[in-house]
Length: 494
Image 1 (tube, helix red, strand yellow):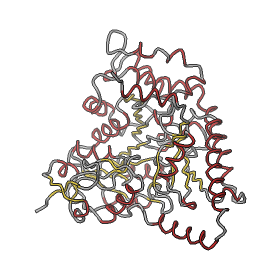
Image 2 (image 1 turned 120 degrees about the vertical axis):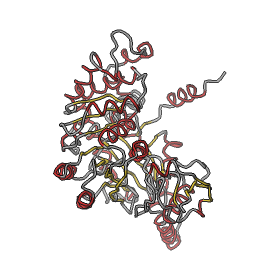
Image 3 (image 1 turned 90 degrees about the vertical axis):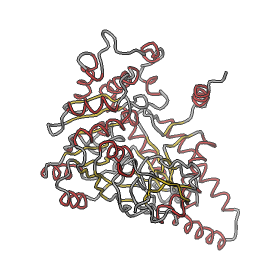
Image 4 (image 1 turned 135 degrees about the vertical axis):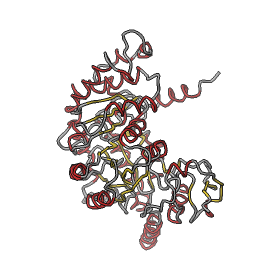
């Protein structure tokens, strides 16, 4: 009998794919490099449960408590709690521990879907802050400080504000100013730092949310550090958040049989971070600088059609070949099929690479050679065409086509709060007939899992056009039950 998942994973492992995606250990390469092989080669023998001597994650008093205390020291928090259901359960627990039912919470519109799910679970009213989106790349770049303050001043009865920092793409902003302002209005700051567990490993990177005044910070340790997938941490700083309420919510939301393998991987990630992290990050940033310098030198004729975008977090690299008329979805496929390189995600305009201390110089050399090969083939093909007018016209058409897909600018109007919408009766209609109707479902391009529309909001033409064009070119959409994207559930409002 075929073991479908196991066989496929073994097949992919044997292909030795170059990883510029999560998890941060990069198919275990960092464990081998640092000599953790003996610890991990028989890790299945460590799989256990709550017995005498193993402590209990939901009532930690012994080894788990000691391990979490070490993590708190390493990450500069007052309290650290291990999470084995990913950052999702940490975000939901933090929000529901701070906000009572019917209360308000402010959040950036570029938040992860788990933030909105918490509003459904806890019957909490979301108040949105518009996110900044780069028109050239469709990259979400965070929030305007002035806009955040304006929303806070208009909602002084809000219990908390939830912000994504850094964004999936590595963009940051003046989080400390927001924390100080929110605290002056007696508002708790919760930060989804899923993609920032590594930030304190170098002064060349932005400061972590913990050091900028956030009260609760949730990090996906598995994304940018060497922990196993689904392993995360929740950090508490100061006394504005009640640790016991957070723990109570986690008992509701997290498995009552937490994985000791995942907790062990968190402890190993802390150990690697503490002992080797800064030196490994120094090497990584040197490799990134060397790579990006090859393609940011505009005098090199072979490279003038490639764009490398590093936001504030240099470990996130966005590569665009839109000047060549190559979409991000096409580049994603090309890198994987022809060069055995897997990126984290793609949108219409480019691909995102997540680089971690698990990557080495060889990874970047292979990426460099792949991009140089793509550019060389493109230039060779164009040099054979002597009709310059035809080439110029082609570029005009390509540029027009690429400019047609733009990330929706405005936040949809909310008619029902997420919980009311979730429990309302729904009917399915054709997607094109849903314009102006109240959505009963999410529309979430994935990754990164940011909702374009949530239950209870008015569906707009702008959103439908965006996803239809995106799906046509390779976008994956979650949250909507019709995988063919022909129908969507709506709510009848009388």
